[in-house]
Image 1: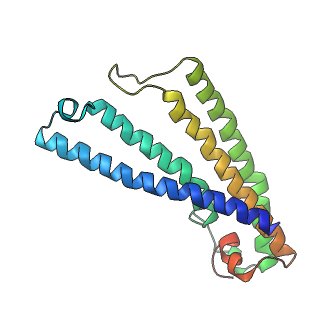
Image 2: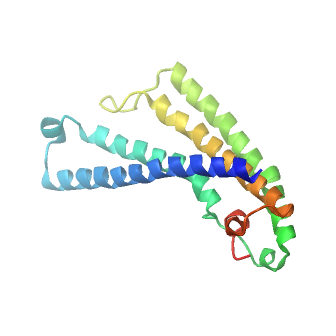
Length: 186
């Protein structure tokens, strides 16, 4: 079980690294936009992009950043936890809480997100949706398609946590994976 979780971890880590580099690209695009705007540079004449396209590129990169890193962030315990009581529980109880939380909260949430966002993206695709601005970017459905992918990756993270927690319950989880599975110190 833990082996399957490791493969999911590797996939989510790979995608998160892509997301992180897109975060660097986002910073560069925002800096470019701010500096050229402050200096009064006509982006369209000099670079072939209008200001609207540059701003829309910023939110495309922002969407990619979050879509590709959310599942990985969950795996790395980057989410908010209320550990006042949980930390006092046994290791076994914490594994059970992780399993139940993922099964009854995170996986249904991810499934609902996939369902609604996939419909949203599909309608956008059928309508060949473009930017509201006449000089903006086209193919908005590609951007909207990232949302169900984000929820899919979050669901995969939940599956990895469930598998690692089950391995922990059976005493098969390596010690170096305990803290990343149930959070906090073990």
